[in-house]
Image (cartoon, rainbow, N blue to C red):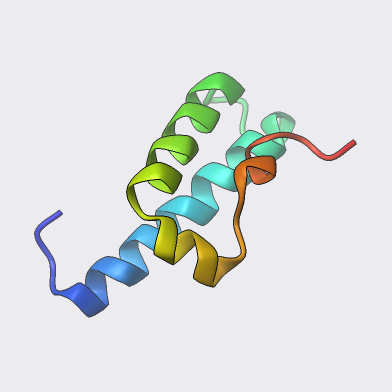
Length: 66
């Protein structure tokens, strides 16, 4: 991603939240499969662990609540 570091962190955090919500609540987002949302979220989580820590996101956020 070609952006300033401050802007990059904001953009990545928005993407992480978006894919986390799509993975957690698949019925609210019927245009995207839950597997695809999980895959995108987990790739972002692996690539930007420090941003995930700041947002308190973990692997469990990729799956629906029990």
